[in-house]
Every structure is written in structure tokens, then in C-alpha cells.
Image (cartoon, rainbow over all chains, first blue to last red; front, side, top):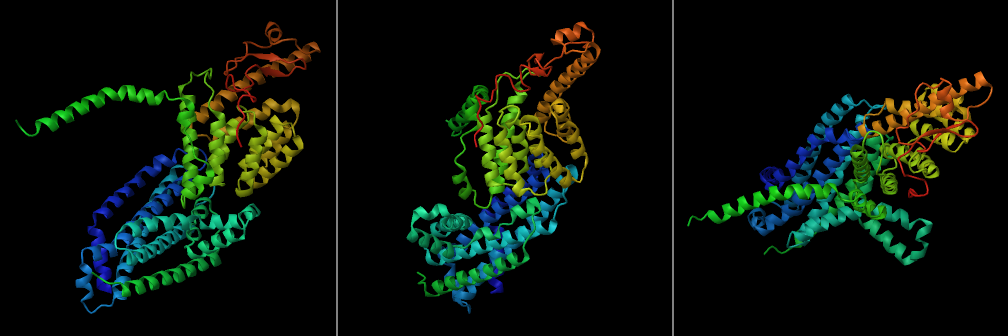
Length: 263
Length: 294
């Protein structure tokens, strides 16, 4: 499995899509001039822009790498040669997943370090009235990375059932959008204004809410930007949710891949 | 025939045409009507789900859009008279949208406070927005300070203003706000209250467009204060109020006529209050004409 992780990482570094996405990281250079447009919250705007850019880059990477890794292997029939080795399909899947996940975490740490430099520079030029909470910013980046690793799990599941890359790529984008807003929909369904919808619609909404990954739980941007206190029990629960949901996703993916006929 | 002649001539012709087109195209974009420039922004109900985990960025981009638009309007104007009023309703709509996406965004509250009061005369809208912000930004003394000023200066609710100034003083740890406000929380202290408020804002302002609007407004209030001092001196000397500003000049108490940077003219109301026809705001902008949207 370690070999597969190594091959996956090497493959990513050679991938042209990866190079293109990393060019987007040059936008970090624009954070300083863009943040200075703010009137009363320059440091806050620099954190907003940094965290948003990290999220955006991780989203692109998780969708394109997570959605195409397995599909490419199957399409190019690499799976035949790989699976003829003394290696189970589950180990192969886990190797591919862990390779991409590890890469995402490394990217998040690298971009986090670049953000630190940018935010620090901005806060020296435009001192903020309230001190920056670096621990909260770090936690926000870490949970963001967890969120996109979860999304890679979703992309892997779609890859095991699909014969083209359309479902893994567009399906993952759809899950990302729906998972980011499912909490809002749930809150609406449990407010008095949802009485008009009827009980069956509310029940259907609840079912979708429980099925979809709740990605808004991983979003700590507002805490990092405005120095709002973090709930340690809430973060622990979110991390537990992440482990459990990921286990279900990968377990499901392994089962589907094991039964899939390779043609 | 060399193979590259056709693509080369197409490229050269394209570049020449592009250069010729740039001038008219740029000026067309620059002359676009205000409504088009501020742009159509979809309902916040739609932006909210679409912005996924980027709500703070979406809110900041709405605020910056308004700010760049406002900077463009102010930048085009001559120093003294503001001829073209900005689309205050559109600006208010976008800023209200921004705080629905990110209720912590200080720029939105700060900027809305700047134009909703003097320019749009929407005091209740401004105070409701500040109340909404105070629920989230519980540490921020600026919001109660702004709301206190609105209550004292525009709504003449001195009790409410004193309460808000007290809160601002507690949050900032700066008793000055409480004492400063106490001195001016009465009808006769209005001009000085405005001067203190605008001076405080001007001190921390880095944005050139806003700085300019504060400087103009502060200059107008300083002129009004000059007239007030002359009026008070006249009353002490003659035992009665002067009938007009001209009378103050004739008596030698006012060396030069007061100049309203908004293009209006100062006058004395029957009770002696100094007022200006511009009402310290952009020319042609009235509360009835520009109802800021919620």
C-alpha cells in the first residue's frame, strides 16, 4: 500500500492539472493590495482572503485529483497490471486515497504557512485593535483540509461506480455545494416558516440532511477571522464525525470496487 | 505562397483592430449608467447557498464593490460641489446583503453609517443596521458610538444616546467618549458634537474617498461653528439675536462670509440656529428621493 501512496504522490506532482491549480496559488501575492481596500478591518480581510484562497485551491485539488485518480487507472487499464500484483483491491483503493489525502494535507500546510506570512505582513503594516489568534487560524486550516479529504472520499466512491469521470467530478461538486448548505436547509426546515411545506417534505429534507456530509461543521473561517472562541468539544465531535463518515465512504467504495468487473 | 502569410496577416489585423477598439470600448465601459455599474446582484437568498463556504469572501466583495463605486463617484467630482448623487439605495441594498452573509463585517456597518444618515436621511435604517451589528460584534465600541451619535444628533433622543455612549465608553475603556458626549448632549451642542464625531472618524481613516467626504463635512461644520461663535458674541454685546449672517459681517464679528463646501448657503433660523441650504449633504439628495432599502 505504501508503494501505491508513493506512486500516487509522484503522479500528482507530474500532473499538468496540478501545475495549473498551483499557479492559482500566485494569487496569494494579491492579498496585501486587496486587503488594503478595507476601511476598518484590513487584517480581517487578509485572513478572509487567505482562508478563502486555501479553500478554493483545496476544492479544485480534491475534485480533480480525487475524481480522476481511479478513473484514469481504469481507463488506461493500469488496474490490470496493478491488480495482478499481490495486492488486494481494498489496499489499492486505500493507497490511492491516502496518497491524495496526504497531498491535500501537505498542500494545506504549505498554503497555511504562506498565509501566515501574508497575514503577519498585513498586520504589521495595518495593526489591528484586537490581537490575531494564530491557534484559531491554524485550526481553521486544519479542519478545512479535513473537509476536503472527506470530499476526496466522496469522489472515490463515485469513481468506483462510474465508468466516466463525469460523475466523480460533477457529483463531487454537487455534494460539496449541497453539503455546505445542508445545515441552512435543516435550520429552515425546523423553523416555524417551514410549516407550509408539510411533514413529508420535512421528513425528506431530514433524510437528505443525514445522508449528505455536513461540510459546514468544518468551516471555522468566521471564528478565525473575527477571533470568536472555538468550542473544543464541538471540534472533537466534528473530528469524530469526520472519521466515522470517512470510514463509511471508504468501506462502501472498497465493497463496490471489489465487486466491479474490470473490462 | 508562404504558409504563414494568412495567419500572420490575421494576427496583425486583429491587433490593429484591437488597438483601435480599445479607446471607444474603454470609454463606453466608463460611461455606463450608475445602475449598471453597481450591477445587478442576485437575491441574498440565492447568494447564500451558492457561496458555500465562502460567505465571508462574498460579503467582503459586495462591500468592496460598493466602495469602488463610491470612490469612482467621489473621485470624478470637483472639490466643492457634488453634482451627481450616488445611488444610495443600491449601495444600501448591497451592504444589507453583505451583513446577511457575514454579520461580523465591520466595513459594511462603518460605510453604511457614513451615507445612510446625512445623505440618505434614513436614520432608522442606519440604527436598525447598527443594532443588528451589535448583536454580533459584542466587543466593538464603534457601533454603539455611531448609534449614540445618530440618536443625539439626528433623532434628538438624548437619553438613548447617553446610554449608547456609556456602552461605547465601557467597551473601549475610554471614558473620554462618555464625558465628551455628556457635554454635547443638548440642542446647543450639536455642531460641536458633529465636529467631535467627524474629527474622531477622520483621525483613523485611510480610505481616500471617505477621507474626502469627512473633510468636506467637517469643513462645513467648522464654518457653522464660526458663525455660532460670532452669533453668541453678538448676543452678548447687543442683548438680542442677529437677524442675519450679513448683520454679523456688518458688525465686524464675522470677518469673512461662511463658505459651505456643499455649495449651499448658510443662514440663521428665527431662533438663531445656524443652518445651511445644503443640509450638509450631496446636492439634490433628499430623504424623500432616496429611500434606502432594507
